[in-house]
Length: 323
Image 1 (cartoon, rainbow, N blue to C red):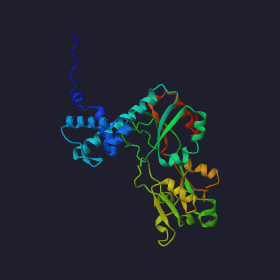
Image 2 (cartoon, rainbow, N blue to C red; image 1 turned 60 degrees about the horizontal axis):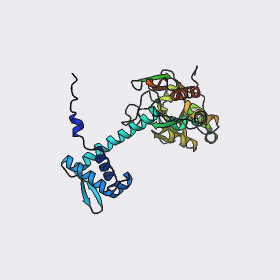
Image 3 (tube, helix red, strand yellow; image 1 turned 45 degrees about the horizontal axis):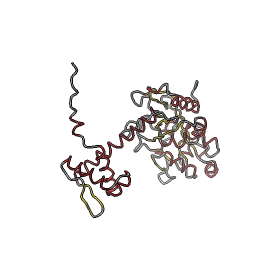
Image 4 (cartoon, rainbow, N blue to C red; image 1 turned 180 degrees about the vertical axis):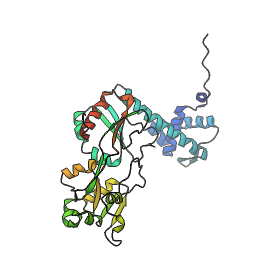
């Protein structure tokens, strides 16, 4: 004999989602009138739903202040939780529509660093879009791949981490090749930087580790010069500027503006060198042969056609053998 379904106390204790939706809108706009306009209902409907919600919770959620409303302490607590829940629901609904809906267009979510998106992806993406007009991309940039915001579940990571999350397949890409870069004009104005000694005493623009998620060894000017047997401590204390920033895009822009020399990561700066915008003042470089970049994709989507097309395009652009 089948047992009757048990009562779910959690669901029974839940307030009406329609009422919560009205409450979130009213709290966001601090106005019942504007909430009604946003939800395409009447102000009376907003007032009725919030009154029922307050009765359900047994406390006032708003203080009426003239024509506007203000959250009570209890209302602030409830709003914080309710708004986050609705954001998560909306994001999940978007993912389901994109991944399982009947739309002819497909969307892939890609996560990479800001520098990679600006210096590697930006000028290459037109070739992907022109060849794949039915695929859209949602690009999320971060310096911390280990703690993304709730609701972010990328289809693809581009990272230095060999294992970014469970459930992902990692394809090894290239090693980092690191060498100094400046503009041709800056090099003409500062010919002394054609030697390592002259370079070490020049204006150096340095990528610092602060505020950045370091998942592989960090190479700054001190490390790079030490490997080439030069000591940063030997720089004159009243000599050229040494500028620190944890924003690589900023450093490259400063280099392009003839403000000094930065360490160039080959996969990011080689297009600028090919265009003649940047040049290498010295031939020495550092290759990190113990580490690689990785293309990591969701294992459950291994046979997904949209992801497969992007993977083939990306690996081809990266020069991965056999791609």
